[in-house]
Length: 432
Image (tube, rainbow, N blue to C red; front, side):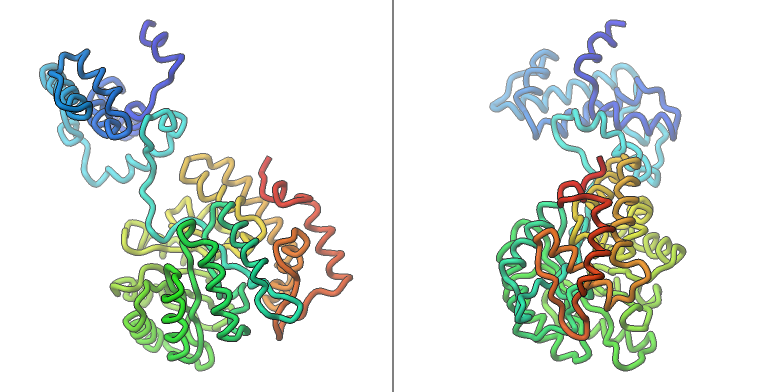
């Protein structure tokens, strides 16, 4: 009773959160788990506020040292010795916990956010360098079809404020229709706005290998963080061609490279065994998947989810929730241009164990995506998306040939549909 009175007003934190999976998986009594984990959590938390743990150490009878941290660590030693004196296990292995189950236990613990949020030092899942929500950004254009630099700033800031990273010169960005000079202008403005705030991805896809290298060199000099490329698409390729192409491209560029599988536009699919071979290349750091298929998605995630040096980014936006739940490292949704916060909600909520919020965000993002994607080919979908962005003052509706900007009748239809989900960007991005 006294323990409940003591803990009730302040709640518990990391020790208890980490203990719960031990009880579920190994049936270790909760009190024993707490005793086992306490000194290690104390040691971890000292880095957040040594003075608090210094006071605890002094109460435990620790000798005062030259600074707060050293005194606090003496308290940890006393706590560990107390556990030994009580005849309790002092390590997970002594308690019968197998090393191979540690990742599963960590996954279970990280979901107990109601307790972890109380901890004095953040405990969160370690994410890979190339992860999170990466939005394939549309290319804002002026009426004369030059790059609208003011709109680039507006849109990039919109994505960053929504917790996302910009990916310029991808499929949604009309990259195959843009001149080299315009590409450079777009990349320069994006880097100017986003550098130090988000990871900047830049596409170098093309049919001419040397042109891709020239783009890579220029974008590297400007300051992007990582390059992305799908296969050349004029000539039909077999898997050996694809393997050789990416090996040579990755070896020729200085920035890290992400392999981009986009059968919708290239009419070629990268076999997963070829992608896995490419994942061993020292300069290939990830794989962006836009091919559909639940079995393929699950297999790919299984291949790389435990690889710290290689990321799987899912471009199948309708499966965002399911993909992150399975262990995908990130999402690449075109609808994120309009609703970056919805996809950040999916990503962050799954990691926090709040599946209800993630599912709500998935359902709303799916509905919004249908406004411009349902029954449309890509050459029609992108102009509708750009019109929607123009409606919310993020860019103009201008597109490059062969695409055609929306006519007034189609604009009216799109407006009626999108108004069902929000009248401004805040309401569009909310699940409330």
